[in-house]
Length: 493
Image (cartoon, rainbow, N blue to C red):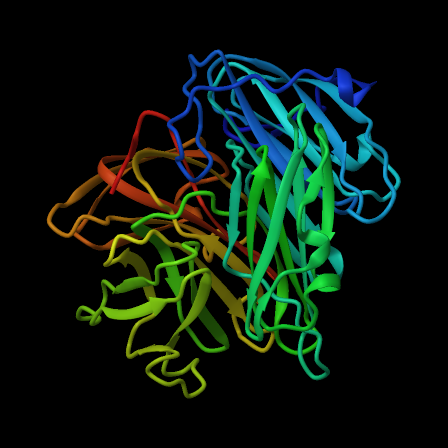
């Protein structure tokens, strides 16, 4: 357990009070928490909430992976963690869950290793139930063979639909092989029945084994997408439930055989929107950025306007694209030094731009999902790695995140002001550094390096709506994710 208060990082023995094996049929359903309907991303419950629940489908795929429970409140918190084995969907596996009691003193982080509770090499899902609010839960996935670590928030909502614009299963000789997995968690009593389809670079795929797929109540399953949708450069997933609700993570990795290397573990999008925001785009030598836009509407095309916000140069001309029904398009965004030749339809080369934010808008009221994929190649002078960040469908005036201690100069918080007519005043409150205040110009963004923030929880409060992204850079990996908005501060665009 890590304590963030005081002049230094204090390590305290983990207060894992105990674990017990429960029959899955007798495990109570997670208590509901009052959150705004269809937020579309994880939220932090207020301190005075009666309870809060976090869902981590891909809590652990290896013995290295962790679930990180951060108590942001000034009061101690207690709760339970239910660990579900997530065997391959078409393999064998038990349905017995392990339930552990936890205690998290005020202002500390409790690091849990799911493999300690369910040993034997099986993937593990986790549900963290807390008495009270003011708690943030993240997962940390590591792959030693890739030199990669990915840390990002777990989910706080279940849904009947999940969307994953980014995905890949390519395995051709001479390229870095990609592995895509989906981890499906159903913590509720009733089974969920889902259909999973893919839009790929080689057309649509409807795997027969993913049609009418049943995920039993209080269970989890791991799907190996490569086995059903083999060898495609892009495998974008649509998951739609015929009945029930569930929570789904996508695990994507490149093996590093040729340039591309890294790991991304992320919940999907549950809410298509008319306006979407991505604060933290970066260009440079040996790097490539792609924007994937998905249209879940089965009948209508989506007419899309893409704004590239680059504060250090003159405004970039917005450009438009059409996304077909039940389809996905990829838009490559590159600098002159990083880009292979690309046509106008494939993307946009940005002259003199190093950093940028994106705003994706539907022009014909057909809501979409967007995700940014950043790949920094092994030959780059920067830390290599893969990141995939789902665009935010909402803005908020109060965001929470945790600063991790890797490369503090290269790591940063990126704050985007989506208002084109108003300055936003910003207050950033770290745990181990002085409070900092900033102004963000209309339609601009602010980068705050971790060197200014210390280590531990950080609160970002704004006078108007903003979107916050955390970028963690290590020596051989990188991880980006949206911060988590506080309930009560969320605003519709």
